[in-house]
Length: 312
Image (cartoon, one colour):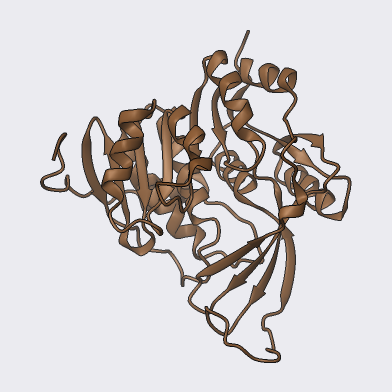
């Protein structure tokens, strides 16, 4: 069967309501005047990865459970407007939604509506198999019910990536994703020392590459048992919001990886895309294009971190 899809994205379709707050944590008060206002727009983790890979020229298809509601209409319109193929499986609980509190420095706090999913949710097995059969790679978001699709993807032979977000290295919910993927992204936000967690993922699972992103501090890349510090890229404009930066990093990394680039080069591409995403207001969705990505990735990548060889 011929390959028709470069990146199959599973999960992570939804809608965010953006609320700008004077600071985080939000000061206790009876009320706050919000500027530049409150905006609801489509775009959660899977949407942003699909947007990023598509903008970089990869044939992208997004699969998720989506409700027959206003939020679902926003998600469908986002994909239609950006030319991203979408398979929307009916979700009786409604489309995933969240409220993002965004501070003046671009940091955010996300509040997810836990009523928009059920423990019994499943992506149709036949649909997963059919799409995987014509795909080069699958990026699996950690939203319910994507864990159940992991064995089907493994059987299909596609490579798999996932983003564990701010995993603490302990929560068992994330383990099936961490151990089934060939390429694992995570945020270092909840980790004092990311290296032991990164090495555990590589030792216990299938991951050939593990990347821990750390915002303005750059990222750590574990590849071929060697840990390398990748510097953050210079944002091309003022930083206004960190929402979607990790998804942009993953999309650009996949662009390089599927194009045959080495892991260090892919990480540099990811850093450039992540920095670009931080300059996009939270009320909008936009992804870096290939020309801007390559232009921003001309700087050399940093050297290996001393004392981090196997067993160190």
